[in-house]
Image (cartoon, rainbow, N blue to C red; front, side, top):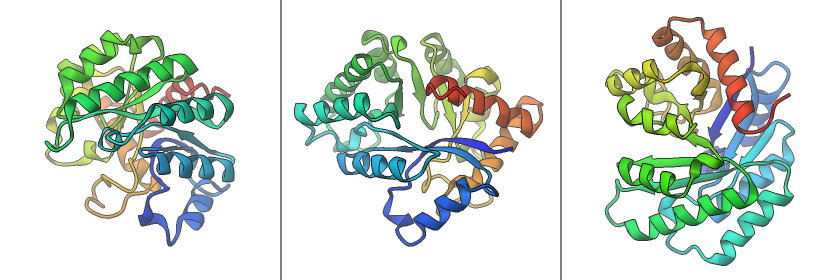
Amino acid sequence: MKIFETHAHYDDESFDNDRERLITEMLGDSGIIDVIVNIGTSLKGCKDSLTLAAKYDKMYAAIGIHPSDVEALTAKDIEWLGENAVNNPKVVAIGEIGLDYHYEKLSKDIQKKWFIEQIALAKKVKKPIIVHSRDACQDTINIMKQEDAKSVGGIVHCYSYTKETAKDFLEMGFYFGIGGVITFKDAKKLVEAVEYIPMDKLLLETDSPYLAPEPYRGKRNDSTNLPFIAEKIAQIKGISTEQVIDKTNENARKILNLVK
């Protein structure tokens, strides 16, 4: 059974030496991947994601500016994102956008401003959002509620908060991207959250080249590691790995409007 990869960064320079071979093999007839969504985080990353989506039939793009890249963002850049979101059928979401308070040098006010602007853009172009939130839980929820992110829906990427917090995102109808962290020995909080989140709101992702699951933790990640994540979720939910893959594939196609 082939797997839907909802979040990867194959434009990253760590794939410069084997990108074409790897993607061709993964998406080929004998590969295990059905679809890949390549996620933009900077303007260059968005352009590279569009290039990859144009090159590979089963690859799509999300375009948006990550909180660590918003300081030089302009209204003209937002306009460019909007034009491509409307005119390019391979663009399935606005993202990854959000808040990251892990590094104190990033201005919280500037991050909030552009998170709000990009939610507004998503509403305008009628695309779901892919949310990055790190050490910024309450502000993320407050902005999403205040800006009616529920009206477009989307994915909380690399979910890392508690099961109690998951309730707030569920009330807004959001899906949860679960990656390699779920396999880590110290992921107790995330395991509890995945236990709590209904199966029809879970998605599989790798965040490649980052966050490789056990037993490859610390190495470059790629989408062929998705089965490790599916197996762990199956164990937590008490169902088969095939059921996890089948349901998460269905969920991904639903939220990203790629229903067969």
